[in-house]
Length: 462
Image (cartoon, rainbow, N blue to C red):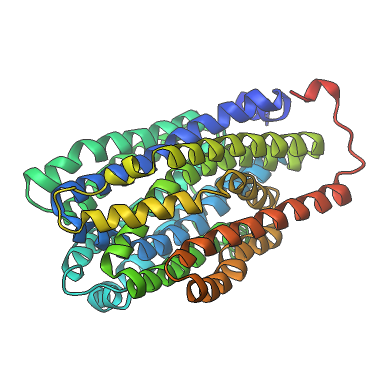
């Protein structure tokens, strides 16, 4: 079978324009996802009040858990498919597509639907009180009911990008963003659904996106497409997908635990408004993290495909350039939140609200502190995702766990006791600094050991 033109460019086109062409659509798509989360939070804060903002923050760990399930299958399938396509194993790549569809739906049904009878107890365990329980439950029920369809949408979108269609993957997320931003005011304010309307708007947006990606994989002209014989689950292939997808999955599971710890500490020192402030900071920082995630997604098919071909020079080059790209993004993010911290966090609350000033004060201080080491976090994220892209999930898992678990949790256990509420923010800075040092050390040793005999051609350095 002759190689598709979209696959040929992965091995022949100069790295920098190739990385940009793959990353920009992914960045646009990830930024679109983040924007409609931010806009939704702004709508809720302006129309539903400070307690609704806190309710959304309390729901964040559950959302992290659901995202973990989606990335386990979606990103694991994307990386596996890239390597298979690079090796010319087209039938295997199509079977990965079938596995992605089936596994995304089945796993998300278990995580999204089975806990519904206990949702009130779950939210109480996460810190909801009489002011925040009902809005958090209303919001969560909608998202959990629609989670299987969201999971299939995002999983197939990752595969669309990995199989050579980054612009179409971007368009699907942009369509979702436009739908979400357009209908959210209707559902939240005009229809009077409140915070549940924010969840309904997200569900509507994801439905439209799902239709788009399903239509793509039904076309005979697509590199990968739905066909007979690809949907029966095979254990070795399922295990391979889940193994490669485990690092980002663990990142989000650990993120769920970490957010719970943060919420518990803020409840202790600042009450419900502290949780709301942390939720605001999380959403702002998450915007730039999602842009870096777009860069890593653009890097993934390039690194995976060229690894399958044995073109290690191109693998090394895309890593270096992705690190530079990510560092530029996180540096820009740091400048934004250092120069305009109060203006940014004020968007999320209605200043006439009696609790608004407390949220703004806590969030303004927190966002300026945790962004101090943020310029270097982008490179650390690229390094961690690079190991996943080249099929070395153990190393990716190690770097993921050290940042969010091994470094951060001990800091959270110690620093608030020494410094009080500011110590919560200091813990994030210290753990990020340690993880950056570890990431650079690991990637330097890895390159010296495995790529030291490969010499870049001058024409391949852009």
